[in-house]
Length: 305
Image (tube, rainbow, N blue to C red):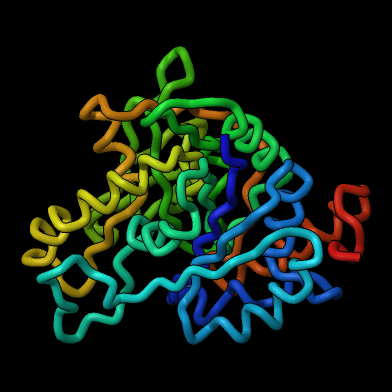
């Protein structure tokens, strides 16, 4: 059995943040969030990582991250190209937005091969526990369609500085994911947490203890086959309705497979508080949390020495 691979989705445009947050230092030593992700992954057992980036960012990524990580673990780049579409499809005029996280993961298909793999966002600080949990799942033998997800409590994953996107999960008594609804605008509101789907005209309350996805998934390689097979149908359905912004998201594909009985997803619960940088205003809180974690001995001052 092949050893699990960590896949980091880092090609996002960072529109709400106002820049390439993946590259901004989060401590005085100059580490970025991905340094901590890779450090935690290495401690958990991962020996190889694939970063999905834009081709034009490769030189900067190598300078900021790759050059210091390579002595400790294998690191490769996959390039998400908007032109990488199924035969017969073209980019709609005026579109600049990438095609979503499923398309991003497909960009790494050849580098993943037939190995089990975990998928994370580049701009989320998940914590050591999450990497150990998902690695321990992936290193065991599993069949096609036997996946996993690290689940967080909603109340631990929202920001005070705006709205976030989360996959709100329904989990059965055996910790299996039965459905996931991608809510693209969740925010703190009136002392609670709610989401809107009509630009804030109406809100629906959510339970703060709901399990949510932070895009930390564990997959068998057959997931890539399903993604490649289903992408044209997604384009056929969504391009006519939303040609400039439709995105094929990993939670949507995963949910489709669950509903069709082609996949099961074991929810690996994590009680940790999310640390992330959706907005520039989130950065000071993350920096303070990292200082506290270093002071507590959870991380060394310099990760790669």
